[in-house]
Image 1 (cartoon, rainbow, N blue to C red):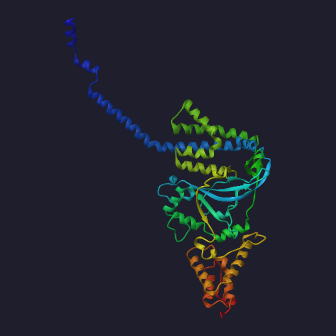
Image 2 (cartoon, rainbow, N blue to C red):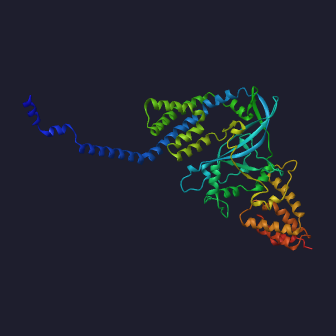
Image 3 (cartoon, rainbow, N blue to C red):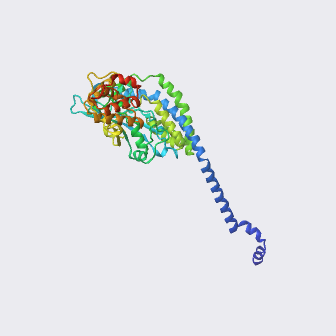
Length: 474
């Protein structure tokens, strides 16, 4: 036994060391493993934007196909079934109205101030109606969702969706009180950032908020639009068992005639490639496969009724720019059909920050805002008739002023015109002509009226033309 042990002890020590790694080898292996891990992580970080770009595009492409499938297939049948019991009718009156402005400053590309293309606007109303069941009921409606562009005009908006009226509240003159509502975050952003270089306001305001107010401060345009488009009632339909769920009668009419069996065939044509492509996008985004990926795909189908809200969020998790495009494309698909009904307090941005335009406030408060008007009966049928009626009433009031007030009015109108505040000048041309004809007005009033007509009225007047109508001041 002792000899055997001694013989074993004389064996080559390198064999033993080969069987048991030393500390240096362990340290070296640890360093190599850490290095490989870091390289792998850095590579993943480097390619993540590219993967997100590709995944976002694939999700967008597949998601739009699924949206089309839902719109032409199951949705019309479900709508027809939902509104089948809506056989009772009532007349709804708008008691509150606004345009909801949705904008997320965090999605705006870094360094950009041109925020309008990244924002959406939706008209909303609170409608009050009653019937045989008792006290009046209120319901909130929000309609078509559109992009808020530079050329967008609030006074042109007269429908929630086709054939469903919309109107702002009216003041004592019969003019619309335009109103935007937005979140506190959006309002704070507008007040703390300068306007974009594309602003049409000159001189350029200091903040995007001031630019927004100036861009929509057009009281004469609002007056013309208001007088030619009086507020209208909204015909409603409801289930007699649930009168609190009323919707515009036009919605019910469209739903009953919108279901068609051929739409289901088109739905299958779109849903098959859409689901296949969207599943590929989910795989790229989540890295999942097999059964779990099929579960996620099944959840996609279950979420189609809420696709308009969910798809941009899913795409945004991969790429924010593709998400914005997804939102725009979905809005285009539902441009004339988008509509939501809810309890009044749940209407979009009902409790939001209010930005209001009134005729006696803003840049024109000391010109247009000093006058009072009464809607003619019958109401004007065109802008030409409305402007003529407004000019007559404006002239009657200005003619009753003394020469000092008239001179200051026309001088102020000229200063506004030269400062690019040019919305109301055409209203006062008749008043200026009448001042020139008025021998009781002094020379200063005549001179101010003449200069206004030649240089700031927006029309074409010449000295010899005005000489013919001017009466020498007494």
